[in-house]
Length: 216
Image 1 (cartoon, rainbow, N blue to C red):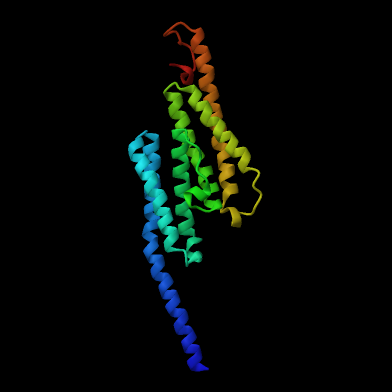
Image 2: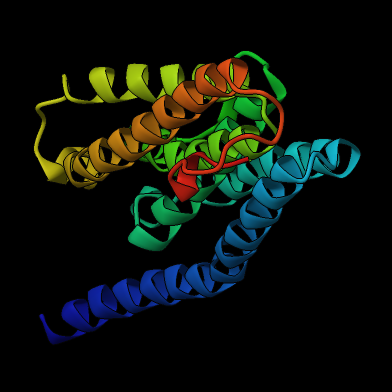
């Protein structure tokens, strides 16, 4: 019995050593995904489309490579550090598509699971608010209104999810945060729209007496 138990434990130890080595191998890859995702978002906001396109393709290839490495270790694939990295990838790729005006990628197309995709979509709305404010500053109100409409649609779709946080990985909390972001953005777009209408009624450079936020 003792020898049999020793054999069992030896086999368990070997498998866990292998898994730990694999974890140490993919941990830097997950961190790299997070860094590259942040860089892709930066490229998209700056309209550095050539660099963004290359980084976007590299990110998707890196996710496929990571999935291949963890094919026989599903527990590692669903570990928090991997799922967080996939969420960041989803967010970056969704922001890229939204700012480019391209069709949104699917979870399957990105190679990520449903919960990271959903949470990435919710977090992407914060970046869309930033883009809407940039559009307002550039006096491009139609673009700001389009981004607001997307945020509105995402919010009203997100509130239909009633699964537990254990399944959605915190989507409810992010949905609540999106509501506040959405209302602030709606207020900003409304104010900009009112200013535009008022500016048409005023002679050029005659905005004295207006509140600071409505001045040219």
